[in-house]
Image 1 (cartoon, rainbow, N blue to C red):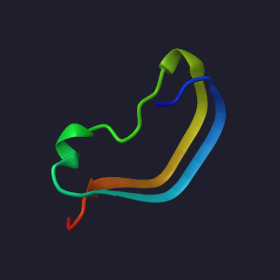
Image 2: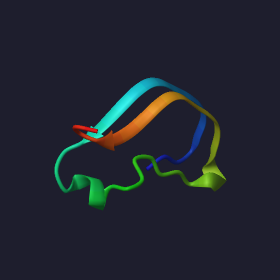
Image 3: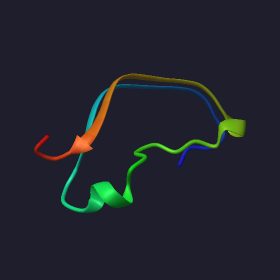
Length: 51
């Protein structure tokens, strides 16, 4: 969960989930849009382990 951010860059991330965790965490990043500005996600991937 991200709140009160102004300026964040995330680059080259490969997030992998094991087992049934994919079902519980279907949104790897959550934002409070009213308090988050200037976020850049470059080459970000999220999937279950083994895909």
